[in-house]
Amino acid sequence: MRILLYAGKGGVGKTSVSGATGVLASQLGLNTLVMSLDPAHSLADAFDLDRTLMDKNHGAPIVINKGLSIQEVDVHEEISKHWGEVHKYLSVLLSSSGIEEVLAEELAILPGMEEVAALLYVNQYAKEESYDLIILDCAPTAESIRFVSLPKTLEWYMRKIFSVERKIIRYIRPVAKRVSDFPLPEEEYFDSIERLFHKLQGVDELLTDPEITSVRLVTNLEKMVLRETQRAFMFFSLHQMSIDGVIINRVFSDEAKGGFMESWQKSQKEYIELANSYFHPVPLLRAPYYNTEVLGLNSLGVLARELYKDRNPADIFYSSRTCEFSGEDGRHIARIHLPFTEKAELELSKVGEELIVRIGNFKRNIILPRAFIPLEPEKARLIDDYLVVDFGGNNE
Image 1: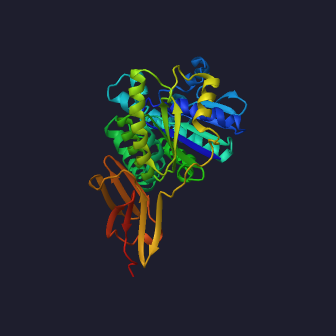
Image 2 (image 1 turned 60 degrees about the vertical axis):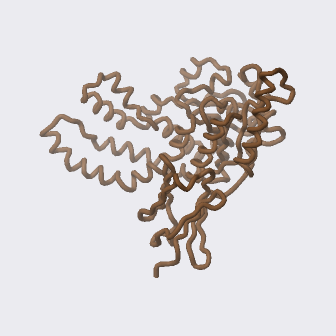
Image 3 (image 1 turned 60 degrees about the horizontal axis):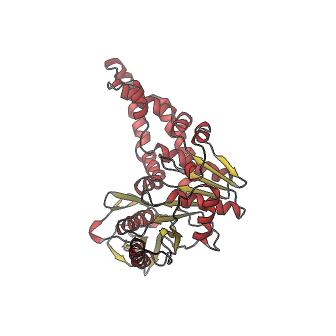
């Protein structure tokens, strides 16, 4: 099975590219699902479907044609399936704080619930081998990073905090009930989180396996958009995701005429050269600019053929290891792929068995191999898009 994530800045055309990829893949004989991860779903609109059809389906996949289905996750439906006790407790907690009950119900839908619901589906479909190809139409960049970081974040919480928190609440709950009416979570709340964690186990291995999952960044030929694409490239690399292509959308053809079009065309040619210098050796794929909206199966199919030419979209276009641990001359070395990173914005620390890499507001906890755990980083440097960390020799 293959998983493709199409990510990038809002408005660059991720949904159209995701839908077009699904159309072409199904035409090539792959049983394909295109899933929207954006809370503001527009996948059905790209296929020119009646919105009421999606609403009636309550977030389940809808068959478009033979070999192609689409899915827009319904967070309210998923809460009832997986977050029941958690949502119930949060609603009660907010209501007890004086917030109107209906509003409390809405506020109890925390950021990240949509991403968790999507991860549950991805893990389920992978275990059941439901599809040959799953295409994820991601939300804008920041939410996409949260999506890929959630499995490790939840794993860290379960290992470091969950059991301690549960024991503390268990001890203080009887006393709290006698002296206050402030609600504390019941055992069902913790059971719900534990069940959720078990259902998600294995999904991180899926996302970080370059033979299964590839990220494709969608961008436009504008300076601000390309810069954000650089940052997205760095953050997905930080989370050990394999990026096998950058898709440049809405490229003007050489036949574009007229003052306005010609000036844009000249600007785009300059930015294409810039993009090549940014992302080489990752391949760049180009999708043309269309004078009309890309809507419906036929239009999406045309876009896919222009974009992929004679490629199979499920193929791996480029492969590189994002994180390597090795021994060299008796020393332990970690190499982490971090393109577009400046030394000034990078912080590095080690806590227990984890190497913690922080870049600006983002951080990644990388589990170290057993041989590295008793060692401390001695020096680190950036070499050719890689952070190279020298842990020294064995502490014997």
